[in-house]
Length: 489
Image (cartoon, rainbow, N blue to C red):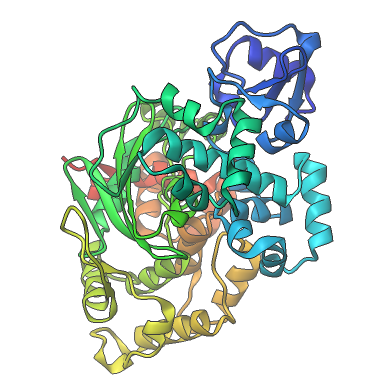
């Protein structure tokens, strides 16, 4: 996008928020970089340079605009619908892997050399993994400075900096303000929070339809791990340094996020997982434009645009829950998952009460007695084969996963048919083109709209919806009166 100068200029001059996160505008005469929707008067075209990332802007010597806060834009939707090396690397960097494991850890997870990763990221984003991680640390630091009363020393280490000196230098360089000045400027905007709770705003590209997104999460909530309370979806999080509890509330122009973490170093990863859960980096305009071009889908898109795909904060957890949900109702799947949580989940303290456990990890589930599970023998065997491979690492599911490779590995396990594989691809792996032609709800909706209802014929008809078939599934599901399609009262 950033190489299409004419398009970028038009986006900046029209202050088009749809392109926030796609590219950044660096202004040569002021040394400042902005998001396309910056409210100030647009610079002259000859003074603008367009760069693909905030890290590239910072590396070129530009500092962040104080008006539009380009560091707080939604992420590029490119990392949502691509499964190549750069996209997988960006998802891992967003999850804080470079801060925890270094560039060598990033390379090991991806199966490439550090040199290959450096070269590809530099070519596409104008910055290597260290610069990209540094830009993310600066953003996390600003968030903590402006929204909490934590001491600066604690913020420095929570954001991932190795020293207070590096923290101070980076903040001054990126924002042209000291940490203290940033806090003073934001003093009137800080939200009231309970001790130890962070209150944040998660931005997204409009439109966003919260009905099926939060409706699905609430209707399938596992007791003890998830709940819907007072207009918010709440759940527990298993994180690299500890655990947390998050509360997510839909607002007209953002998602209100309240986080309670046992270790502040998990903030970056927690935010990344919440954004991924709610599919907040999607480009709904591009999705709806393509799906709306189909005359049979067009009325559904026009009626409720901006549907997102409800995803997950833990890929392994969702895979287990997908197996528990095979050929049973939503209520039965919740019951099975709740029993697992009660018997094998790790107990935690919820500052607001209501949530009691973390969902059990694969290592714990691999040690359980399958005979203790109240389900058919074949499904017990399916669950046992899944958790044993997740536990020993022969099956790895995470933001770095290669979608095609994981599909093939799942297909080789007993009891994994097309529906289970595709629902995992859709909601755990994040493949926007995952499709469920054999799903009962999809077939029922297709028949009602005049679409082919047999899996083969529907798959052929859905070729025009690619690469957004997972979003088409959301629109088809929404034709039913099932609770997953409605925002809870």
